[in-house]
Image 1 (tube, one colour):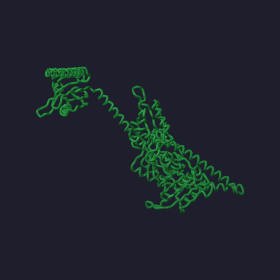
Image 2: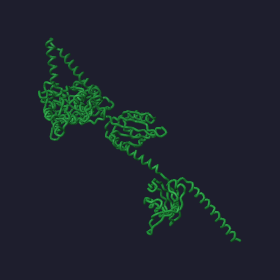
Image 3: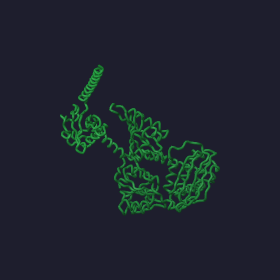
Image 4: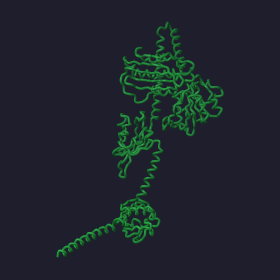
Length: 611
């Protein structure tokens, strides 16, 4: 009886297991027949060497035909109804049989002309060659991905080629997602340094501009485009003006998903516009000073005059002396001035008393060009000291020392200007006229160096340059050409000089720079500028310009016509840009157009266009 009960129990358990298997089989069959994805069970076929070479379909669901377009595949070899199947399919199936590890791949299937996503697993344990594979057609998705990739490649090509910097931020987090290579040039940093948190970018923006710059980005986040300018400080310590054009990027629902931007370095543009204003201001300032000096001479000449004739003689003599000094400093190459006299005349005119300044150094006669440049430099330093520095308070003091030293087998002079006791003030936010004069004109015209700084006690300035004979000291280098990004010099409506190559021969730093900028603004390619006849001659040995703008008084000592005759012989048209009257021009050059300084830059462009 016990054996009968045990047998009954075993039969009951077996029937239960069979019921579970039947239910499981029914569930599998229902899923197999109704699933959208293609599903097939197949056996791998191997050759005599044990290599997988084909497979035979055991069964396939309805989705198989829908996904592949193939019918009646059960019992058939894949090579029969899918000839030309790529080897990587057989290789993958063989790995799954061997390892028992399921694999997923996305591959192109040539026989059906479709991209396929396939998930394949082994049925049974080790030794089984039966596989089940679920796959579906991803052709449309792949085509969209390829189209997107091509679009991204086109955008990347555009971004890589653009001189403007392109960037994209997430509108919600403001994290930087993309920057183009030009950002590195504009911001003076690695592009990746600006990716991520907005704080990396904001840290480069000057504090006084940061809030406004951030507000304009927020404006774009709310759907309104914005154009704004702000200042940044580069990693190397230099400051630049950036113009950003910010605009919203919407998703398919019309919401702002990202913010895009175009960044441009507009420093040169703003400096050029500002420079024009500085020149006008300085011109007015200096003319007023000259008029004040003349008035003072006129008033002071009256003191002590015995009669009208005595007053007339005294006044005329002093005015003539002033004129001789001006002539000496600007045109005579064989005269100069004493270093101490220059300092005395400039600092002494501003100081409240002699106790406010101390001058220490050897007696040195400077060339006319050095006198001219240093007089202007010390004037600027003295004026600034009176306005803001040591001379603005009674306790302040200016100490100037100068020494001689040897460098590159030449005698140089080193000058140090040190202020003490100046009232505290905020550091300057831009380089002013005086700083440009010292740090740009001295290297340009005297072939030396100049540097100014604002310390807590007041301004400091260090200048050094080689002492040379009067003629050689005027051999200056050309200014570095400024690359213009449209609008640096507003030549709207001026003649188009595109395709023309213009040589500028001018020894004055400002005139050369402004003339070159105007010509570039009109579309011309500018050679030089060349500050000396020697530099111009060297350029002409290697280049043939379309035309030339030529100054007459190159290097001082009066007008020179060697370059003009060389241009005439070569048939290169040119214009004179000069302060001389027409009677100094020889007869064989009398027909050459003469532009009288000072002249509007637009008139220079118009004259060159008519050559």
